[in-house]
Amino acid sequence: MKFNINDKVKVKLTDAGKDEIRAQYEDLQLFCTSLRPYQEPVEDDQGYSEWQLWHLMSTFGELMCNGGDLYFDLEIIIPSNGEWIKCSDRMPLELSDEHISEVEVIVTDGTTVGTCECRRGYMPSPWVEWSNYGDIDADKITQWMPLPKPEAK
Image 1 (cartoon, rainbow, N blue to C red):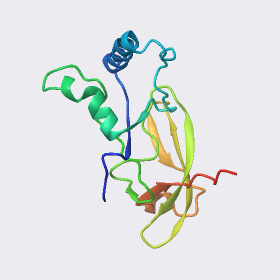
Image 2: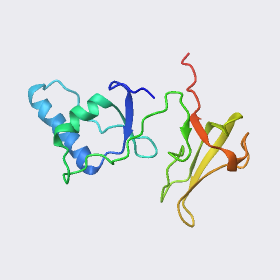
Image 3: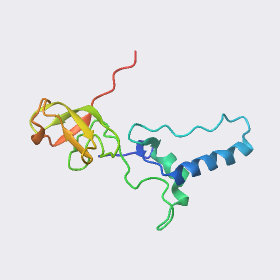
Image 4: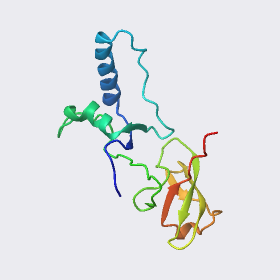
């Protein structure tokens, strides 16, 4: 897989990370008084925000060191760009103690390609599973990728 420093990644910012972004923006406002008011980074339903890798490293790189504050969780998601993701590496949804959700994705068992819903819940404890009603037997799914986004009109 090729990856460019201009490509996007997804991270879960910590409170320290959110505080640092706000502080950097407020410092910039001292010199650029015409900047619009600060806005929190947009997060998806799993708490991830999307960054170009160079911007993430520019924002936090010199602050990070062994034993120092964590500005984002250590797991970084590199979107698939149309490449298959192994289920053993990552499922479409993460475990959650408070969210129930589902997402439909493209799946394969190595021979057949189809679609299936990935679901998550939290009772009696957090779980993530494939639906039994997809195009491929849930026990045989080995890889997945997001559905393509619809074309803009």
